[in-house]
Image (cartoon, rainbow, N blue to C red; front, side, top):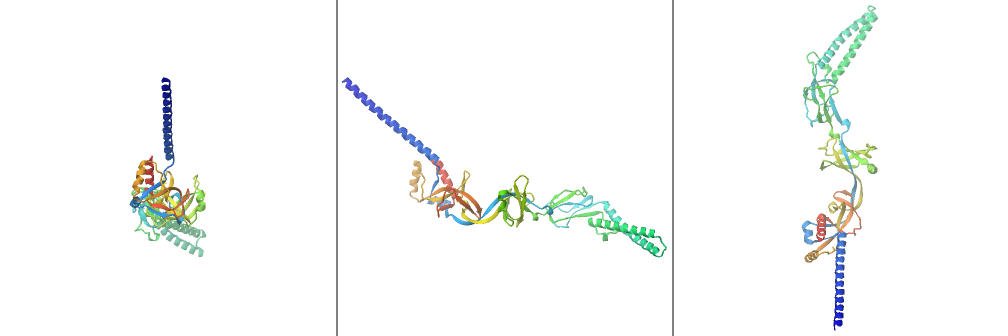
Length: 414
């Protein structure tokens, strides 16, 4: 009996041990499968977003097919605003003197010939005095020449005296001509110079029309020929100096339109037209200067400002969608296309969400990567990394919300 009892006990223990081993192995395999499923789920990012009719209506999600649009391809280039040197002026005085008055301020618009300032110097009076004396001496020299000529013609005078009188007259006439020209350059009319209106002050006039950009002198300061008094710039002649890379140069043509914005004030857009293309590289930048005249509005444009320009090239017909339909994530661009595919279910919470959505119609959208092309008039050309089905409907309004819904859903699952 004891032997039988021991044999039965051993058989029972062996059977129990085998059963427990199978159960443990089964549990280990289940945990392994669960871990593999979760790992696979983590490796495959969610690309399907589901929205209910209520959600689409509340955020105004709008669908549209890809259109064929005639878009203008563009080139982006940086540059500077420049005024040509022949439309800039540094105003100086032809003669030294003390500044008596300054009639303008920085920012004033002035016209060519306008009086900008006055200067005074006693030497101006001496120059007018010399002119009047030269006139008087010429009158006497002319009389002396006529008298010597008459004597010589009647064999009563020496030829030497006639030649001396002729030389004196010519010398005085040359001196008068020089003084007359100097007075004209000073702004004094020689015909109006007399003993009663000798002027000690001169005017400095504007050589070009433009805007006063700098005033270098002040009342009471002494200026000479080399001293700049004012600076004038004609901003109406402002143009663009765009720096275009060598690879883009063959695409540039005279007459192309450039839309540009100020780097420090990108809110306002200006227009320009290319009129000249450079033929040499600028320093070591390996760029070529392309010059364009600013057209239309020039308010606020100043010489030396940095700008960012978009050069419009030839138009081409290409698949395009509204620019707002494209979302950016991790340096890539995506669109959401309506699809019959369904998002994978990985949690009980998502299952509960599905049950709650059974009472309202849902629509699924697949996130598809695209490559952006040229943009024009609110549309952007696209090329799908993978294919987009013909006549597929794309989210063109509310794409940002759909992307946020997809991102939040992915984070919730993990």
